[in-house]
Length: 76
Image 1 (cartoon, rainbow, N blue to C red):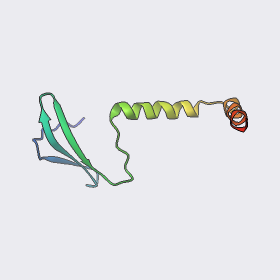
Image 2: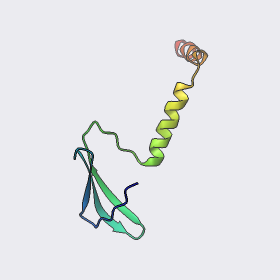
Image 3: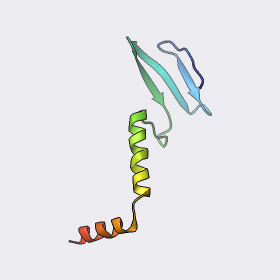
């Protein structure tokens, strides 16, 4: 893990320079960040990303009978 110190108004660049993270504000123990990235780059808070990942895993674990049940439900 790379650990950096930045002040308000300073930034870091990630990868080829297409992603920039800037420190916008510091209030007590909270840091407000601004992220500039291409529109096709998803950006999520970690807790949201973990829920998406869990949801995707559950979808992968669904069985064909689950899909059959869903099809019957949609037809009725």
